[in-house]
Length: 161
Figure 1 (cartoon, rainbow, N blue to C red):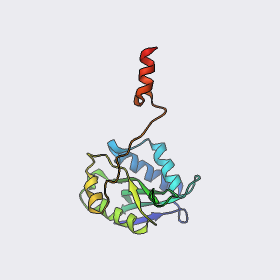
Figure 2: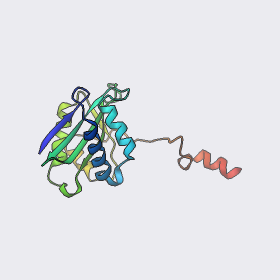
Figure 3: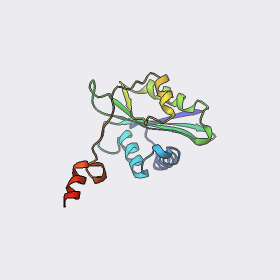
Figure 4: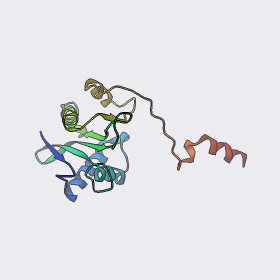
């Protein structure tokens, strides 16, 4: 497998970005996001939007993407890691071949500073991250201001009305 590296200094073409976004959208499955959000992460990593940059890796076999990683730099250090692994996906038919592990090792090698990632508790990739030295430092909690279903005080106000 050839690993291709895309950075703000060696960016992906629009065609390559679209292929990467399509691949991630298809293979992230239940852990994925909308395609437009994936494109935003790619643009952030490649510094095509106001950002601190990052990088994108693709694993390629016979001119076909079999795995992809997107890492964004946070611009912070210490209390927040310098990098966040936004996406990693492996072709569903190629899982178990070590593709994800090779991509993760390369990402760890080229990232400048520490790396954070978010993983669902039931995601099988969690074991890979632990093997590579990632630990659970925090429980992440989110407030989604634009999603009233997630805001109990809004539910209470709506019930009183």
